[in-house]
Image (tube, helix red, strand yellow):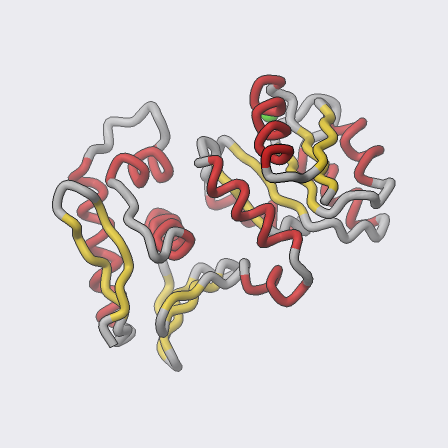
Length: 225
Ligand code: CA
């Protein structure tokens, strides 16, 4: 597989390229939006990893321009900001997936693999699911059968994180980092509060999925059906 990486932080770009190559794929790197777009327009790539904040031309503009030219390469957008507005803008410009910095290498590789598959799977990654639950990333709603509930920003991010890590335990530290970033005064209590919000919402839509607390470890989804 050929993967195009457009990222201006040289060290991160090199790390990404190493990760891709370790996975047995070929990586090509560009450090600004303009040359990234030129390369993307060749249409030679299976997946593109695209940073949002780039010199010369930002990621959103690169994405819109390549989609306008009919380039359908699946795009994984990287952003340091976890703002809802960014995600919406990214999806509007035709991004297939979003990853918020900082991210785990495993998470990036999993996204790249998911994106490299064909269209149906691509759509699926836009609607992560577990048990009777499906998260609609376009409308920020959580569905269970015919019932649904709208999630607020942090609830949405937390639910998405739990769903993407379904089958494994996610620690409070990871949740704190992903939802609040490095420089934050938020602590474990904040995580617990949002977990309890989500539990209430799961109950509200009568889902058989539970968020289990594993003492000293973290949380995981379980299907109590
Ligand atoms: Ca950047």
